[in-house]
Image (cartoon, rainbow over all chains, first blue to last red; front, top):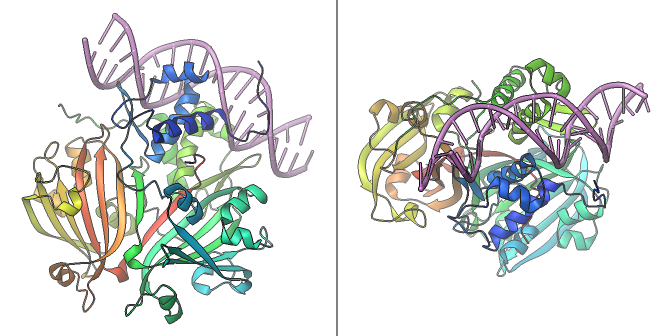
Length: 248
Length: 248
DNA sequence: GAGTGGTCTAGACCACTTA
DNA sequence: AAGTGGTCTAGACCACTCC
């Protein structure tokens, strides 16, 4: 049994899932049609059925397919709404995926104390972190103000290019961090005059605030973020499955 | 089109997941501690390791645990947040889980044409559906106005008790429908005077609008919903994991 | 009855953590 | 070295759909 043990991080099931996902995206498999059966996929990828099924599970969670017993795996029509924005996806990744004409102004990159509304219940207050403030514009209109606070272990410094580009690419590819999960909270709140003016809110002072805390695979928190969105440009799209676990 | 009215029989992995979830909720397994190892859980539940692992996968997706290679499955501290509201959870289910003092006024239950902003891109316009309008109050304050449109196949009628209580319980337990997934979209928009007055918005006319489309396991859509939330009472909490699949 | 997905098993080998 | 989780396998049996 010759097994490929090069630096490929991805598992067999991940490669299968990625391959099918791309075929769906490029419409080799089209919405309303069924994927090849699991046994056929076993032949196609030279793997066992459980491995194929784990790959299909990922596509199911993403909302790309729906499995129907006795029939097959139906490709869903995901084109109608924007792509699964849910999960953990950075602005820069979205920009590339959706081909938005977006720019980023880095307004600040300094060590600051973490604001209490962000630190609350997550990390010690009084703790300092690398504060990166970025204004996102689309078609030259300000739409999002991101306030990131990066905790020192594990992030000591961030190059200017990474701040202007994709922080996540820098963390994952250059620092080798394993970003694992995040908690997110969306509210609508009045904001300071400074923020209102940066977002060009006009007479109103209401913004959509997305506060999130992002963790590494070893459960170490490394990023606290507050994103302030213009209400009229804010849109959150989600795909969700009904859970089988209930809490009584 | 026969509708399966049998009770859903839970699989072994579901029972294991449910059992561990309850033990976490009741702090038999506490945040910061590790669950018994997978092999120990095999003994405990008399099952194979893959089955135990599928159960743990569910808990991982829910954000209840984080698996760390070489160490074990760490129980996460989810208490700080409201419970995972993400997924598909009805107001009534939340009410029970969180012990809110909530009431529901059914304002309307009639067959209506589906509004175009909801039907758009999902179902044919001009199609009629059972329209249920409900005002949700917490501590006697209006917080959410739900506009539900239930498609006729598969939902012909809804008893008053179900409308006032939990629609989902009626669909799943009485009609035997298998609710499977939903797409959701959150925006902030100006609303009509009627809605503004029902929500007691005062001088403002901005509400948070959550539009969703819910589907059955056979991909048949059955529910279109627009929920109008008072901005100052709106809070969306989410747990998300980094996806391994990328779209280039 | 043939083909599909749903579940479960027992075992194997690997990578990582800890002592 | 022992214990943990990560992955993959080959096979089994079941439930459902469609002809």
